[in-house]
Length: 244
Ligand SMILES: NC(=O)c1ccc[n+]([C@@H]2O[C@H](COP(=O)([O-])OP(=O)(O)OC[C@H]3O[C@@H](n4cnc5c(N)ncnc54)[C@H](O)[C@@H]3O)[C@@H](O)[C@H]2O)c1
Image (cartoon, rainbow, N blue to C red; front, side, top):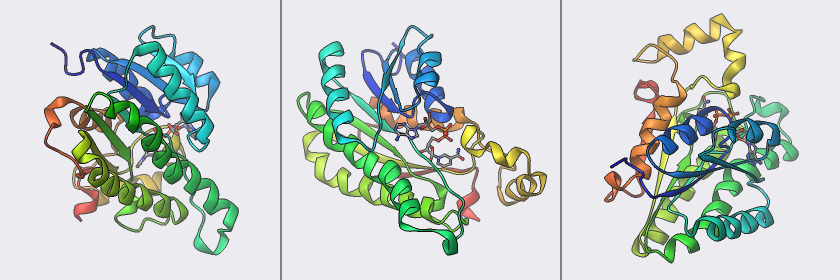
């Protein structure tokens, strides 16, 4: 039996990077996967895999969540797993940040994850079980110059704890992961900066950047029934970066 046999999973930001890796890995483990993303072209591409159902979603729009959950329950009968993975980043120094920048990051990274829980949890509650994994970041734990991004991921960390407490007795587990620097389209700028790359590698005990499958493997465990007594946990997936 595969590790996610019979499960229905929604992965936000599921058309690129870590999300796309999870979508492929989860289908390989027997899940029905809904890759929900704002990028229609990327969705069309990932939906070429006949086991991945691409659906358009802007995580910061409540009405999008409402219709996505209705459609998934209607088409597939239930929701077992939600991975709040969609995210955007910014490297602006604090001196250049204005309200618009703050709002953009916060509404997608923080509010988006909160709305995912708000709309998906009732569907999980009907089956008295569910697993939610939220993508925070090492930048929520230590300063790395990403300012508005760090703040938005700090809110993801706090939301995860709060939701674990609120939903535990209803059978829903909520955990957060804290990736370090992972090679995806989000970090492609690093590739062109040899100095930055070697600095990160030097500061990482395992001495390399993370790969999408490093994160996907850890989330697969938290999403599965193997983690049935784990909620409110915080898992670093950073090659030891935050241990330094
Ligand atoms: N790559 C890293 O180093 C790293 C480190 C720590 C945390 N993370 C987090 O991991 C998650 C995945 O990042 P990634 O590196 O795979 O990035 P990515 O840019 O490859 O993928 C992000 C996906 O989110 C989607 N998205 C953006 N805004 C959206 C919205 N409003 N609604 C729906 N989808 C939206 C994008 O279209 C894209 O498909 C993000 O939350 C990111 O903050 C990444």
